[in-house]
Length: 465
Image (cartoon, rainbow, N blue to C red; front, side):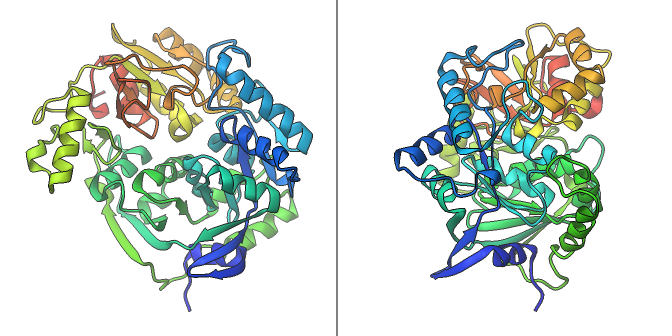
């Protein structure tokens, strides 16, 4: 019987059928960061439990560390205790810890793929909802709560309910200026932020196959914003080329043997999914959000929607509330809206390809008067590679701030915030009320669209530049 890729990974990791759709899964890798990881290891110690397989856990501080140039652990005071706790407890338990400034340090969902900590066919967890990012290399990766994280550290297993399966096929090819960020925002805007609830989502189709691995990671990153706990893409030659030679990947003949196994992972022809969605990639324009949910997404040529046209009373209320918070008027074009801040970074769009895309728009231009613009590399490796290419100097000469790796302004957990009432175009993944700081107004967009806003001072169709 034909099987989906999800079925193959789930079944091969199922230790026991617990009944009523629940299974006990083996967990291959843990990612630990300074917020949830510090707490989980503290609880492990409080309960006098051992870490079952410390060699399968990897820790790095990212959420609560400053991204200011020349930062230290103490630059953001409230985060220092979390960093020191993660560092010391990782050492006590024999967990590999990537400290500030070290090779391998970065946002967990950027450094894990770049080091090949995550590989096709593995299960990977982290106390972070955007763990689904790692599905871009063909893994079953998902975020967990604090009690689940402790359970997995102590037992290398996790009790999970089997989700249904959804395949989203992007057919055809994307047009000029359209990036993976636009693809997934278009999808969420079309289906809604709850459409993936209870599903594991496989992204497929020619437009997905054409994406480089870093673009696939971006696509999978916003799976949770569709409501799905897991999002993934079948591995192929692009995946294997990306992983080859990376630090934690198999080496030599072992890598060739691994490829032979990984080629068996893609869904079989004729495999049946619980839901199929088809998106015509040619219909996707550069996309930006207007409201306070990732589903509030429109093409750059569209107008801010009128709540009177919402499909039901609940969404009418939600749209009105979103427009009030965002300070927008219905019926007005989203293009031309004045911008105060621009943020390029995060586990969504903080990789080299993202920085290059922003740099291509910035080159020969300057940040518009009145705009504050930041570039925050997603990892130490990204920072070093970008500096070797001269991208830091390009951004600095154009009036951007060039920062140290970390989550930074995506979640504002380190004191780096958009001031109240200010409007930000951000390459991050959430535009919730207060996400980038109390009263901050956030529009989600691709790195190129964010760069276009920075140099023009308004939300701009990147294709015009």
